[in-house]
Every structure is written in C-alpha cells, then in structure tokens.
Length: 494
Figure 1 (cartoon, rainbow, N blue to C red):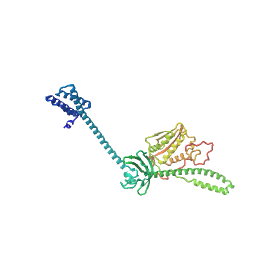
Figure 2: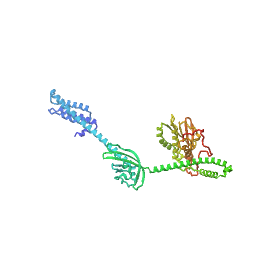
Figure 3: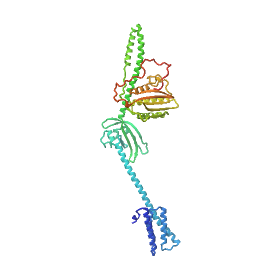
Figure 4: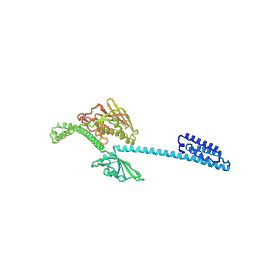
C-alpha cells in the first residue's frame, strides 16, 4: 500500500507527504473524541525518510510532534508532556531515519551490483579478446601444470608440433620441449620466473627445430602454473648461417686478392732482379738459377689469378631502416663508452643498391674505428649524416678522434702497426665497390670523416650478371719496397 506512494520524483513524494500531514492534522483537529491520532504521522514520515536528508527528517519530525501535541486532547503538563513529546519525536524521527538508511543501503547495494555487472561484462569482453588473441596468434601459446602436463594450447601450438587440433591438452610437454619440463614450479611464497630461453624442440614426426621460448611461472588458487610462448626460429638460424657464410666467402675472396696482389708485387721485383742477373753468363748457366726462374714463373701464375667479386647479393636497400638497425646495435656500446652520437638523416632518402649485410658490416667497422680512435679524447662525439647529392647517396661518419696521420695508407692491407691484420678499411671499401659504391676518407678539423658513397636503386637495373663487374684492388699495381723506418706510421684505424 505504501510502495505506490514512494514512486515518482522526490518532489512528488514530498507533496504526498505534506498532503498526508495536513490531512492527519485536520482530522485530529476536527475529531472531538479522546482518540489519539498522532501515530498516523508515522506514514508520512515513511515518505519523508525516502527523499530528505537526516537534518530535514528531524525538522519534519519536530513539526509532526508539535501537531500531535497541539491537537491532542490530553492537557499539557511539563511532567507528563515532555516525556510524551520526546517519545513522539523519537518515533517519528526513527521511522524517517529507518527509511532513509534502508533507501541509502538499497542505493549502495544497487550501485555495487551495477559496478559488479559492469566489471563482469568487461571481464567477459577481456576474456573473449584474450581468447581471440591467443587463438589467432602465430606463436604457440600454452599453459602447464606442475607436472609439465599441457592444460590449454592454441591452434598455433598444434601446428608447431604437427598435432591434430585439441590433442595437445593432457599430454606432457617434455615430449616436445624437454628443457621446458625442467623449469621448477612456482610456490605460493617462492620466486617466479619470467624469462626467455632457447632450446631444441621436437615435432610429432621426429623433426627437430630451434625454438625461442618466453615463459613465466605464477600461482593460482588451483596451484602453480606455467605459461609459455614458443616460436620456431630455425629459419632465422639458417638465414644467419647463410649470411655468415656469404660474408666469410666475400671476405676470403678479397683477402686472397690482397695476398695475390702483394705476391705479384714481390714477384715483379724478383723478376727484375732475375733479369739483371741473367746477363751474367756464369750465373745464367747455374741449375739453381734456372730453378729460381721456374719458381718465379710459378708464383706469377698463382698471383695472376683474377678473382671476381660479383654483386649477386645486391638489391634495393632501405637506407633509413638500415641506419635505424645500426643505431640499435651500436647505441649500448656508445652509451657505455660515454660517446655522444648525433643522427642527421634526411627524410627523402631513396633506396640504395647494396648488399644489406655487407653494408651493415661497413658501418659497424667505421663506427668501431671511430670509438677506438676517441678512447683517449676528452670530447667524444660521433655524427652520422645521410643525404642525397646529385645522383648519389652519401653517408658521412664523423668523429672527434684526432684525425689520421697518414691518410695515404688507410685503405692498404697488412699495414705495419695496425691492429689485427689491418684489413678492416680495405675490406670495407672492397665491399662498397662490389655493389658500385665507394668509401673515401675526408679530413676534418679535430677528427676524421669517412664518406660512404652509394648508388640509388632506381638508377641501376636488377639484372646484374657475374660479368657486369670485376673487382680490382684499389692499390696500385707497381712493385714497391717495404716501408722504411723513417716513413710515417699508418693510422690505427683498420
């Protein structure tokens, strides 16, 4: 009966409460019999308690108490009236306060329920998105119990191990990834593992592959669990090894060419001496002299082998992307050595014609040489700039390493005093010339700069053959003697 009166806006409820108070007061005033009607004010207090705050409920309770006392037939005497009025006020106020607290609790409960429903809906949406992400992921994802038994696995995991869909759950992971089965389970107060490892995996047909595994251990109400994501990196291993073999063959080819060039120079000098000695008839008739001539001819044949350095691995290379990879590679080492590096890369660089791995080796050699040259300097600054100039693309590597004492010997192999074999710059320039580029030294104030000269990809055709280009060492062909002690020492840059 009361619930229809509580419906509507707060203003409508207050109007109903005021009307009920007025009706009760008029009725109590008109009835002459000694019938107390003050208890009827409890009903409008129900309405008041559902809309007004506590202080307003107290005011309405005071008004109802005054109306009850005013129209009551009992005489007002302080001894009996004051306790009676206190009782009236307490009854009215407590009734309104009870309804107020019930309504407040109901609203709080409703708000809490709404928040729970929203959280449930969001959790359901997140679980659906996570399930879609896991199921559609190209990486194998699965969870394990403490015994190494697969609990859940996505489709990529079944494809990785060549298993029918849904058959991986309930099987031990040790059959496919033995290293993962040895990971200790996480205890409720123990250390959790969040790391990556590389191990060998085995498919259902016995095929072995190399796998990168990202895994983490965690604790749930059902016990410890392990979640792992696995990627087959066998193709990366093959590409890396093939690239290393290509670099080894290219470097060995150039190295043999350099050795042949040095032998040819020595043979030329020996041949001149042999021809001069042949004029002496007494020496010319000697068997040892004839053997020496035969040896010279044999050495000349060995050194006369022309090695072709083809650019069959060259292609269009995104120079901006390659320089970003270079930054990723060298940035930690530069930071540890307190070298300040600046990158000035033009935004409109075209693709260049190069072998990506060889070009990366050239940049790495130049930056390492610069870091080595700046090791004893107070100011260590490395600037790498890339820009287009006419029909060429230039990359400048400039440092504050103090410059080069003898620039003429920079690109010569087997330099006396150079670190290792002194082939770094020699091989770098040979790599550049193998795909129609070049490497030059540029003298600058307070340091050194090397220019990597590249051809734009659009200016070359893609149908290069092995006869398109023949590698020839940059050094001169004439015989030269060994450097004397009085000659300036070559640069430490290799």
